[in-house]
Image (cartoon, rainbow, N blue to C red):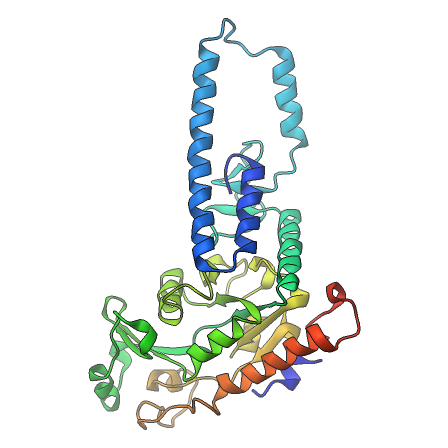
Length: 343
């Protein structure tokens, strides 16, 4: 099954850290994800308190100098440590300072978090089992020209000025599709059908946002698309989180490649994962978007028009996603763990 061809378009204790990440993988709602993050913060605080108490207790001991056996035991533990991950360049298990190039950065999950390759694989395997148990796959979604279109206010044409009086309230985002973010000097238009698309796709997929925009922009767009944090939780990846400049990769996604689909309007953004990609028809609502890609025609906004809700690109690709999901879980002959969305 060729997807492109067929498409229409965390703490001082390693156990606590692993439990935190596993809980994040198992969470079925943003509320659970937030609770896990809160629990992790509390674990870190408790760990720090316990360390300080141990130090104080040790200072009251009759022997202030560690024994040779204790020193050797600590050295052996440090030498044997596999360094599954780090916070602030320190191993989460043994506390040893690690090179700043150690492992893969997962800052979108927790600031300063890096994971060693074996730990990434372990978590991806855990995620795979969890997804299959809930009959879900992984879906990575681009933002610009795929789910929405944004423009700087200074780039709006005279024919688009009327839009400034038609923007929706940021106080009730779920009922709007056109937003002016004055503090970012941009206007954003959500693609028609996007809210229905996200709702129905979330029943079949664990979803990620992955954009080449910077992190502040990514988070603001995630708020517009998912104001209740029902669909993405902390799974919002920006160019600041990637491992290769000007490229996107599944290495920072905690899902196995065999169960991951990508929706993006730019094939070149995914040089290593083209088999996972469903190429989207670009959404050009604003004039600046048309100019960016060298089109001299009027934009949808200048024509005071828009894509169809029922026959537009997102409605069409949702049908493809439903078909892939059905084939993966109901039609393929291989055992579930051996199935691959790229085949």
